[in-house]
Length: 414
Image 1 (cartoon, one colour):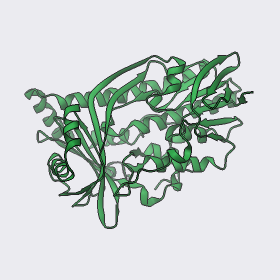
Image 2 (cartoon, one colour):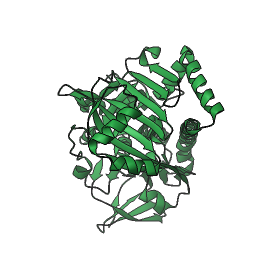
Image 3 (cartoon, one colour):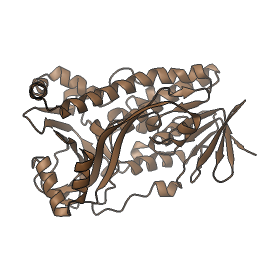
Image 4 (tube, one colour):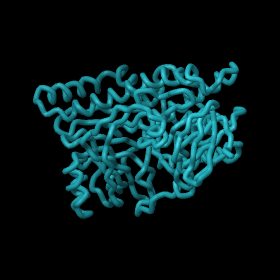
């Protein structure tokens, strides 16, 4: 006999767990399941720095969402690393742009936080709700029924619900089982990620250099034991990534110092390196009757601007707003017209951000002299345009346009 729910969220990561928490105050019977046991999903990798290499640059809008759901204050302030400034420059030229939160009268652009800490905070906030959490449950079959969907699990159990939401990541098994069509392509780059200790303080600044090989970002982390730490994401061509991964520790640190032009002094220590192939995916549709995709299951983006999880949390805010409104009107939340409201509101915004990141990535890979001159001249010009820079900062903080209530300011965001 299958367990009955009104909503099943597949994927208990940051995005899936947040959606469940956003709807936990409704009358819906909600289940969240994940292929990994939850204690395993929340286990940080052991590193010399103490920082897990999987981090996110949370925008102000994302912080608002977490604060409104009683999750933000559950993250220890010692592990919420604020960044107040951003410095972006052309590693092959003279162009440079500096952004500052003060342009908008804000005290920060966002925070760098380890992914598992965000997930833990949301799951902790779910503990006092009636939401059912099911870890270590892998979906093997998705069966359409007159009343909704049946999820057959590897354990032999089955779950049924009229509405199922896929939040199980870029390689979504549920998306595949449902047959959503995808547009996808390789960036022909790999992302090298690790945590480093630097000689000089990062000055609460996110540093990003556009190199011929791809962008290199140093994301500021809170100091530990008097040391200065940054999380790095270095986008490299596959053969370059292979070469950099093969370097010994001292050679790698020297290569990294040269790539960042010594702006933070010497690289004193580097944790174990990880290399991840980069691939962009976008679902041609986000919804079908009784099914919806959110987060990386719907769209995965180049880590160029750290917008992936922020787009996913905005998906959550929009979908939860649509479902809350439908419940108030007495509508069927699994109906296609209801779910299409979410798709219309989010698909355009996500495509716009993906196109912007793709444009930046291509522009900075262009070697033609006129384009190099244009981008450097353009960066220098933009750096002097206060109002335009403020508009860019506002959008990067996720505060541009009309926001669902869940993404609007909350009292506890600090």
